[in-house]
Amino acid sequence: MPRGLGAAEQFVADIAALTQPDAVVWCNGSDAEHARLIGQMIDAGTLVPLNPDLRPDSFLARSDPRDVARAESATFICSAREEDAGPTNNWAEPTQMRNTLHEVFTGCMRGRTLYVVPFSMGPVGGRLSQVGIEITDSPYVVASMRIMTRIGAPAMREIAAGARWVPAVHSVGMPLVTSGGTRVQDVPWPCSETKYITHFPEGREIWSFGSGYGGNALLGKKCYALRIASAIARDEGWLAEHMLLIRLTHTDGRRYHVAAAFPSACGKTNLAMLRSVLPEWTVSTFGDDIVWMRPGTDGRLWAINPEAGFFGVAPGTGESTNPTAVRTLTQNVIFTNVALTDDGDVWWEGLTDSPPAHLTDWQGQEWTPEIAAETGRTAAHPNARFTVAAEQCPLIDSDWEDGDGVPVDLILFGGRRASNVPLAALARDWHQGVFYGATIASERTAAAEGTVGELRRDPFAMLPFCGYHMADYWAHWLQVGDSLTRPPAVAAVNWFRKGPDGQFLWPGFAENIRVLDWLLRQSEGQVPGRACAVGTLPEPEELNLDGLELDPADLREVLRVDAAGWTSEADGIADYFTSMGTAVPKVLWEELARLRAALAAQTAQPSSR
Image (cartoon, rainbow, N blue to C red):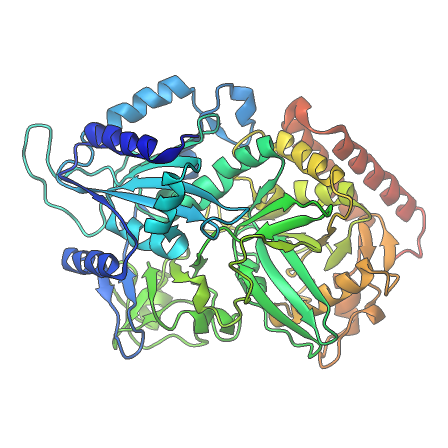
């Protein structure tokens, strides 16, 4: 990783010589700069201002329909050795990829402005923070990075003082002047059919070409905070994770910090902004998507949210599901690919129980419920997003910008599973907890390429985001845990179990505090739980269900561990481990053997639940 101002200036000069922009602007992060960029994007048609009385200082962007989600098939880990990328990543030989990138980046910013965006992941100067510089030709990226990271002069001062920084280069890949000097008409959402999102773990570099959307373009997010940071964390002995981070405070003064990994559309944002239905607990949030955790001198894991904002999925977020998120989005928001109401506000599926009578959809076309019934066309894209500062969240914790972080007491892993996986299971130790994380499976969502609804293994919710071999990543988790004298408790949860009628057995959302309550009490030995093949589960009477009307039969079913179903699950896990090759840690194979033995013992006991 380069250090210092001189290296930064040389980096910018080299990229400017390659990409040939009309101008170079070093961003300072000021309000005036932001207002100028917003004005430019309004004039270009990139942003539509929303009604200032209904949604002050907020804007709608409509992306090109070809540029609406992570481009996983175009995402590469360019490690020196192919085996270091592992079977879950697309690998490209570094020299060959650099040649390809040099070709597509040559002249790619002609007619555009090159923006230099120094940024900090985590509070500027914090003990757990890191800095970087993103070069981009997209003002949308600059405005979004201002929300999602700490950009500008403070980050630049860290770099000038000698901090290591990650170089990140981005272009939408649509020059406005051809190599022959002919000017090309710009479009509201420039992008290219050719896309590369590339990571060089050894050099800590990121190069992204062709997409202007989300994590493909906001390079501080998945590219830096997970793919490159996971490689840095492996080398330095810490963890860069796709997790939320919350604080639970009891009326008796006890405080607990919970980190949780869930694949997309599995309730992650809802849990990050949980409003407790149990009066003895209050919940505050540190972050909804990424957590960096480092071992402390006290033998515990200490965590920060390295981001400054929320880049959340809009569809499904509403007053009945996540009222905190809705209240976070009242002003100063960039919405992407949601629908526009006739009075200049936004709407998406799930925001309200009933849709408006008329909308302009995410592609700028007329939309009504009748049109939707005839065509099946949604008003908002299923992966529509909101970008908003975390400080606007009503439940943001007062310590969320503490650069030293907070100690983690409990780690959760969970996916969207209609069967088999019980509501909650507490691991007996760190090794079983890593087994939980390594074997997460969830239904595929619109945020990823593939068939929606298909079951895919998503270990640690890091499948698209781990910057090196997944099995080596599991080994790293085991090593970090073994170095801790006071490791967090680890649990697996599943809010999505269904009955034979296809209905959810557990109400979820705010009621999930009841599961967290039990997990914390059980981890402290206050309730015995029920030991079974997959961990320690709640007895029905141990859950605090005050005020909740739940069919006892549904509760028993959501806590049931079916030996036959789990035997099949174990077979699938064995196949998955085998697909990872010889790098799978021996400990995880031993955990699988232990699971099989426990299932066999359960099968031999007919009275077992």
